[in-house]
Amino acid sequence: MDALAHLPKTQAQLTQRLKVRGAQSIKILAAQLQLTTMGVRQHLVQLQDKGYAKHAQTNRQTRGRPVTLWKLTEAGHRLFGDTHARLAVTLIEGVSETFGEAVVGQLADTQAAATLAEYRALLPDPAEDLNLTLAALCQQRSDEGFMAELRFTPSGWLLIENHCPIFSAASRCNAFCGAELQLFTHLLAPHAQIERSDHVLAGARRCAYRIQRSGTPKTNHEASA
Image (cartoon, rainbow, N blue to C red; front, side, top):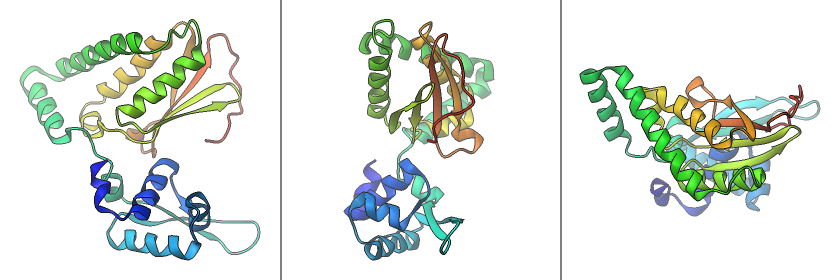
């Protein structure tokens, strides 16, 4: 996240909040950062002038005036780096043109297998304490640049990745996203089931995974995330 270093401290904090939480109102941002609404508004306007933030949809309320929300622009999202993006895409395209898409998929699977072995060596055994494993997995993913967080839901957990440091590579080859889901599935099996509920490549703001203990009945209601 070195690209944020050129921003004033408050603007960097606002940018991070919008990245992690999505569209927010000035009032909410002010409360989170313990600033005045006027100060937050001024910083957001400056971020808007720099091309990093813009107005999102207006939040209609049952009473009072509509609330204008703010969100990051594409340039704002790019402040959170895509690890070796240009090199990764160049290598993927070269392998694809020379050996075919199937080989790129095999490379993604090989990388996932290596990461699985690494995670099994680093993280607590899910057979002993699934909650501890998920907490450690969340921290590991954050350390790798995914800005991960773990939330409880009525039926289990929600693992959220607010940033994708391999977005360019994943955009070029969907196999990397499939390998990631396979990685989590193998890591937690047979103790938990996991499904992707939000996907950046499908247009979502983030990637998110719903996790349930194996044998836990699915519910129709999930906590708002």
